[in-house]
Image (tube, rainbow, N blue to C red; front, side, top):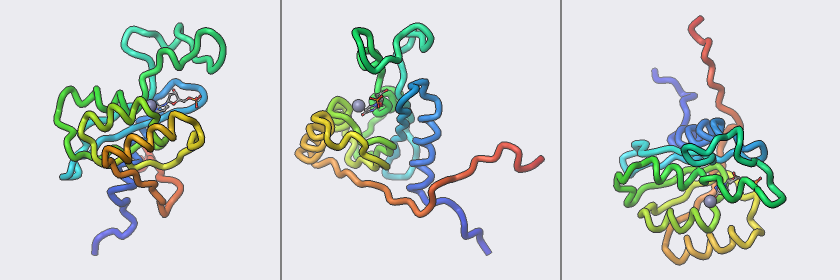
Length: 161
Ligand SMILES: O=c1ccn([C@H]2C[C@H](O)[C@@H](COP(=O)(O)O)O2)c(=O)[nH]1
Ligand SMILES: [Zn+2]
């Protein structure tokens, strides 16, 4: 008889997004994204971080002041789109833990992604998120909040020891 406690496709793809977020050096909000095609194949992943050549140790991670991370950071969704290196994303689905901002929404729409699956929406009242929803809705990109039946998935590197 087959195992019954295997993870669902949604848990798998969101799990990959959450794992990608663990690569982020952002001290406040780590975001991960995973793009999946209609055949349930992962096309790309990304997380929020500075561009190549812009050191995590010298560029600012500040949230306020003259020199902030917002001027430099590449968002998880855009990184995932760029990491696909021109592969067609037409009709694909993007899993991301945080609801995408307006700039990511533009890239999502233009790249042909047709569904955004997200976990939380902590900036729902910000103008960027409101604009994002307006654009995604106008462009016919579905947005689905995932309601998972478990809070954690354990990754155990020692299970065979
Ligand atoms: O669509 C989005 C929106 C934001 N991010 C990243 C950008 C920043 O690194 C953090 C947000 O930092 P706060 O300190 O919570 O303002 O999230 C993203 O990757 N995608
Ligand atoms: Zn964004």
